[in-house]
Length: 195
Image (cartoon, rainbow, N blue to C red; front, top):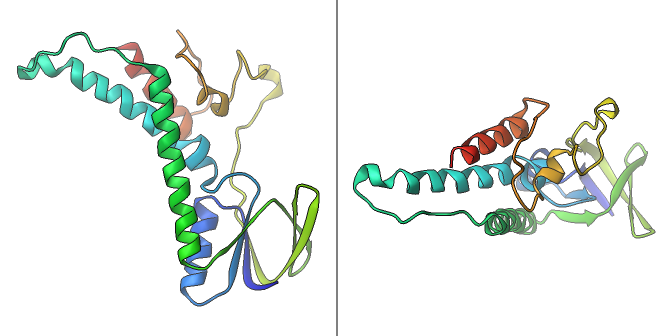
């Protein structure tokens, strides 16, 4: 298959570029080895915002009495909060898939490798196919930096990916890193503690 462009990575940089190329009349493909939406949508900003929204709703209910609205002791069901977060993410991933289809962008699941100039190799489940193209956009995004000296073990010392899958909120947490995801986890923890 020959394309005007092959975009490696289906996150916010990749899928937006692919859609715009298609809108301008180009034939384009996106190669994604994980889920559309990248870190931001699946393991970052969107899930943390969903958690923050939940604790902010609780805070509003708790402060309702200040406005003359009496509410009997609200409580939070964290497993339902996590389920809602997952629903939000799935809906948005579906929206990206819809936009790619609507704009006739071909989507290839698998790991991409630039084999030669103008040739991207896609490997998925032991099968390989080659995509020929005039241009290649590398939009592979980010992942948490796992600093070995900190003793990352995925249970007591975790990345944001594990933090988003917790079944209960820890009593305390030290957050290393003040990027968007780190700051949003901090906001969630502070608001949660004040519930």
